Image 1: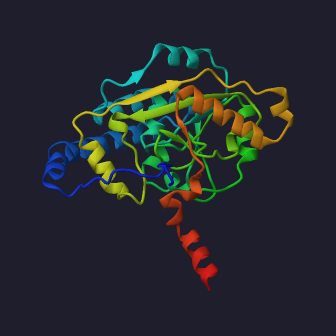
Image 2: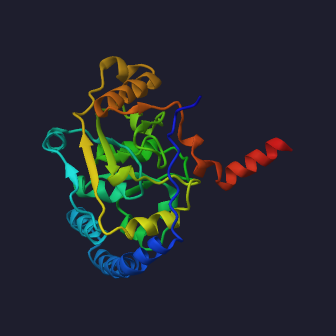
Length: 286
């Protein structure tokens, strides 16, 4: 019996009397307010189109955005804050249970860049806000970015990787992708979870309904935990990258007391619904 529930989530019934009225009373006013806020910020970023302004304004914008969405009683313990303060790691690997993760991480790492999906690059307004924050994959999930990453690291940048890929149950750690491990540097591990262990899995419920329900909650909260940075050994610097990946994954699982999954991002319902994968399956059948 398969007890790996990495991609299982409770379906959110948005079109019910309770959730719909929550949306009208809380969600809709928030959406309108956020749109106005984003447009104002976008104007400022167009006027002050400098990276230093982006870095200075990022935590302010991110914290205001979270406040608008009802985020209160958020938790990050003293040990985690100390681990962030003491870390010189340029590579950061975080869990990815929700599309809110980037906003949460911006409050902690205002100068960092994200390895982001092409999906983000195509969202109006958001793509401009993320213009200096993203290193984008060439397709939805794929694209060799080694040269771009190397250049950013040489310039002293910190880079955030969601190494397990798209959103999944944060109690499980999927098999990790190679991007964060190619530079062969120390890694700072981050784990994010949300109230009631809420996370988003495409295929279990519609993304739009999930987000509308999420912003309609009167109160939201998250917890961030941070381990001491993982120090790469001499053997890992010169050896098989798969061993480095698995050693780090064990450190992450044990440090955060999570469960190991035998699945990877390609097992995600969202990945299976991508047009290129549908085409591949049809061609295989023929």
